[in-house]
Image (cartoon, rainbow, N blue to C red; front, top):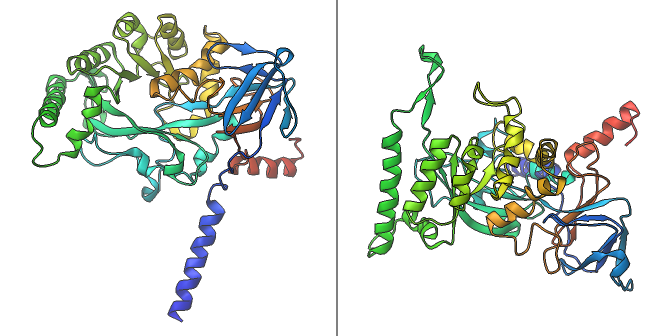
Length: 436
């Protein structure tokens, strides 16, 4: 009887798991296919009207104008995309998709680790490839992303994944690409619940916090140069920053924090530096350009923080940085960041309304993040020899009114665009007589 009950419980749990799991990942490409007639947005600023794109073995083998590109249609599927648009798969920078499923359920939250200094923590092994939130990105063309840990002074290492996989090993495109540091804030807010003034005031512990971080790096260097009688995994994880194989991601917002963080990294011999957030990065754009620092710019759809900021301050920062020649990518961190990752193309669209061209805005979520993350040899643009990670939209992919995908591919694999949200849409469309 007890065994029977155990079996029933196992079957019940299995049914629940299967009913809530992501769809089966798409199979490998077995037959060449061509996309004909679409406007191809390459991702590097170039646009090809009436294009032909041929995909073989998961890679782009041919791309060019239809009129001047010969095509042998034998043994090849053809997708007629006339009047439609083709884009590289969008890339989420500084994301946490797959690390948390339900905020209120602690067992599904693997966002951060205990402790202050955790450079050895690998976010990739906590990535949940079957997350239903991850699945919901694909209908908007968001196909790749950064898996980034949070918390502590040094949060850990990030990795890059594709959003249609069986597990984290299958999903991984590049593992342990960089280390993330939360730079100490130069200002703090009073604790209103203790009767303190809630306004901004200088952080009196700032010098001490910076020194602690500097001392940690000094100790790590000494350890890595000396005899290793006992292994110290956190110190070993920092080696990549010093030899240039890893990127340093510095979360900093105000001018002083950004300047101090960059100067700190340079003094430590770190060459690959990206500012994350960068609320006031546009105010010191020349300094960032001079030091060859890229920026993951905080979510565009946020309110200004300071009383003297323009109402459209956050909308204009991307153009300010792009005009200064800085490599910029958009990131979605903040409230409800995992859900908001699907709005990535529309953040880029907002920057168009505030000064950038559509192709410049497209680069913020395709070529630029690929360059910063070091995956631009295969992803981020539509070019011969690169991965066929792309999608077809009926309209402008940066406009939420017209971005309606008909096809999406990762490494040439034809993806399902069905999600829990699309199922609900169809169900209630039928209920209320709305045409799909």
